Image 1 (tube, rainbow, N blue to C red):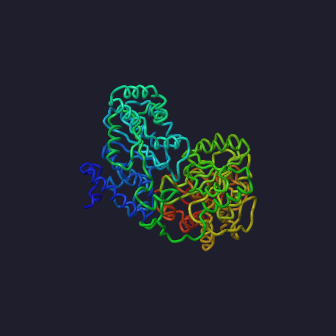
Image 2: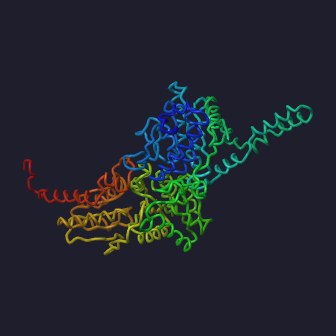
Image 3: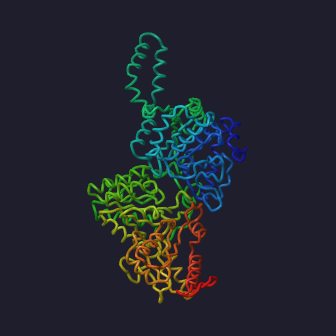
Length: 639
């Protein structure tokens, strides 16, 4: 009899025997492989936490006890055990989120997937519970997939150690990997813990020897305690945690439910902050994933559940990331001063190809975007030109460093933002919607958004030639469209289509050029003249763009970032500063968190389609035509 269908809440686990728990773990793995192979999603991380999640829900009482996952992509098993077993729409519009979601369940608390934040959340929740006298409620933070390499996690640990009465358990899900093998000093420390027999085992040997009696036993015991300090440093590197004042339990086999329950119960009984170190294998139980040396099937598309081979139709064209990767290789061959940095995203942002040719010129800092940006400022000061490549959503974490360490010091650092704009199935925490609005306020910063492959190469080269200010290159997720050549260039602004009259100037930013041209054609079909331009360098606003606007009745800006503070806002401000009285209609994303779905679905849901925008613009032009001439009475008002 299958057990998984009967698990509708964590308390259903209480009645299962150890043998049944093993059976359940096997059923969960089969379910994950079967379901995620049909929809795509984060497979490897979840296969690695099956027994760990079962043990957590056996020992702790969610949602009364709070479980926080970091990163959130390892929460699929948690969803299954808390009654969410319909994975048919995983990461699709209307289906389950790929991350914890408060809208789905009371068992979910922290929704976003920006790593290294769980310990701060747990610290705050646990302290609040103590202040409210709720000292019988526990908080568990499950931190893994490289999240412990982030500086924020260590800021939290520093404070957690001071709260000795808090009912807080930190489970380190140590699989040695994020997307790829985890790097850095913390990773080396955990590796030492994984490969050491441990101080407790040494003590057990000493006690056994003493029990044998006689002089040999006494000598062994005395020698043991005489060497105690040195031995502890050698065979018990958990001292790093204990020196912070944190109780350490482990390492424990993360695929043994009974051993995990024992360790977690010990931690729960301690009554204060405890680290439980669980050793897991990413992709455990799926042969194809276990054999993968790159990322253990971290995230997959549609695959064969038996072989792990992709079943997705071959894509047409080149991905933006791949094009950037190839161009960086060419840049590296031409310029020895160019170095590359990333934050645990070497392969996803395409820097692995650059690293293959120039391994000494690539730095992966782990999940530490702040450090990456400031380290890049230091490299620029020392005469190099760093390229910091991250997903657009993760740059949010390093805005202070961009402002104070790079821009204020006029450092020649180039930031490359992959997956800018709407990303699709990963949802609200992964949409790259805020970068243009946030970066628009940075003094001296220049931001480019290529519309096609040729412009990516051109603009990357131009960015790397800037040595006295930060530059940004942003591009979306997906396939690079066909090149769109300009009919002319005016002061650095590319004119892509020019109407015969001067009704509307459409300013299309980067990946929105296709939509802008579609809008122009739709307006022309309605007898409205539209000129469509691509500013190439979207920030700061080019003087030539102000001059072009001066000759039109309406300016429409189209961007795939939030409208509040974005490029359209900057254009409106530039026109006002130049005393150009032309209305500006800003089209972009609303300042709200957009749910998961395909790129097209999300864009359509906020009116970013050619039909919607053209209809709106046509109505605004009609409004201009109906406006009274200066000096004439306004209809409906006294003259």
